[in-house]
Every structure is written in C-alpha cells, then in structure tokens.
Length: 218
Image (cartoon, rainbow, N blue to C red):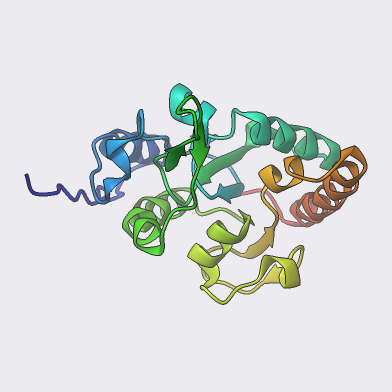
C-alpha cells in the first residue's frame, strides 16, 4: 500500500480553530513510518494565546499512551522548572519536533525504549511544527534539546555551546535553546541532577525576564 502523506491545512481563521484543525489532520498522518509502532499522534497542547512555545524532541512512552505532550517524568520536571522560573505552564504551548513515539523493545521485550528520530523523520514532521508556530506566532520560542534545536536552527547548532543565549531567527522575536528535561533525569546522581536543574531554571528565568519586557498584545 502506498504511503499517505498529509499536508497541514491552510490556516485562515483563529489560533483556536487552526490548532484544532491541525491536531485533527495530524491524527491520520503517515508521512513517515513512525505511526506504525506508535499508539497515536501526540500533537502540541496549550493556550492558543500562548506567547511562549517550548519544542522538544518527540513524545515518550507516557505521552504516546495518553496522547498528550510532556506528561511523563520529563514533563513533571519541566513543570517544576517553569514554576521555579516564574512561568505559568497554563500560558505556554508545548509540542515536539516529531509527533509519534519512536521506540525499540528492551532485551526482555517488556519496556519500550526511546530511540532518536532520524533526520528524514524530523523533516517529514516539520510541516506540522511550522504550522503550529504559524498559528501561534509566539514572542518566545524555546528549543528543548539537540533534536529540536537542530531541527529548527540548523544541523550544526550545538546546545552545549549556545544554551541559554538569545538567537536571531525568523521563527520568533526571541529564540533560545536549552537542554531537554529528560537529560537532567539521566544525571549520574542526585547532586548532579540538582545542579543541572538549577542551570535549566536559570535558562527559563531568562525567558520570564524577557517576557516581562514585551508588551502584551491588545
């Protein structure tokens, strides 16, 4: 059977209806093969009036089962960091560069282990992400981790060298990249996790700071 490649619908109305129509269309996307092993498409979620958009790599196991982004352990850490930085999660939009969970079974076949998406899979999903950003027109865009940053800012972009810095980009007025919260969870011990989380909060505090300087839309 031939692969079905769907294009995002044209955005012509309000962010609310645009995002709903995008999410509905993405549910049946087969632009790459990731849909075959995923439970469902996991589209972005958040306020249609969000002024900040966070982009991660892809949904994880919990997200794949629930159909919602950033609801697993990494999502909880993001929630904690947002609160510590003074950013209300209800006022942001969270999404991923890839909308299906890519995984391989562990040695015993009982757990699904995250596998990094390929550049072709990222490219296949890029129209959905572009359409989300077009609908939202955020003031601030934050890339979480190397996959999201390289997908949006170029394959040579290094999060480790450029994290926490404001980057000029046509994607939003203010663009930043930082680590993905899942990398903090993989730290070798609790002290390392605490230190890495503090750095993450410091990056997000820069977002909160610049948001206080940007006038709210009328």
